[in-house]
Length: 314
Image (cartoon, rainbow, N blue to C red):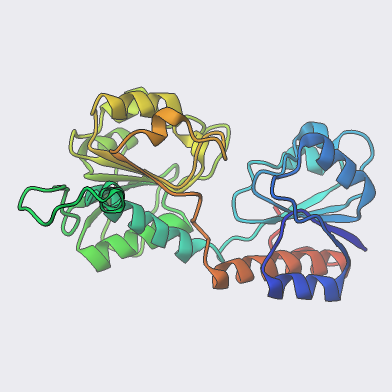
């Protein structure tokens, strides 16, 4: 079974892949284009792909040789799963492995945005700091505040636990379906109620056609002036130009982003804002987590090769 691995993985994962498959390691710095993806699907029995590899409907046209695409990551909005099914290609992902690491990044962004950590760090590096003063870089207290989580799946619940049990925060949330037992003290509200009442709004929904631009100018305008907007989900959940305009106008106090609408492009206007904290999609960037994701993707491939349904087939 010929396998293409599209991006460099951790050494332990690559070693196990090489043991199990006749593997080609593309190891490109950039994700595959649609043309590259179409060629790979025609040349290999299976692909192990990552965020950004453009497996659109166009990539699955013709008669692909590949019968399996294992996605390295829980989010798979870069893969047209419906088109893959029509072409007879099974797609899997890696849920669970990313939950705690992504929740940790949400808390990192909450704290960085509230306490103005990124602008303070840049200030120190610039050499302009002359010492502590009582009114320098005043931010917002996090402990005891209200967090509103949009999307209470695995990651949303992990964020809620950290906020409530770690920082004594009141948790409210909005979810597409009713959740009878969120696993901790929390109230389910409408999205408008969450936006209007939370001190911190955290986006933790999957990227789907229904969630694209879920948060735009109208939604940001409903937030409190002192509130912070945090996105650890997918970039296109926020209307990026609308966010930039709102932050330039000071509609809300801050935003913390780990994802962007057109990654890796981050608009200059966004980068220029001191009230926005920007991270380079670090959600799962811990060695143990990337190992776990790789091994999970590999387990999906092995199951498919051995004639059984991959445990995380979509």
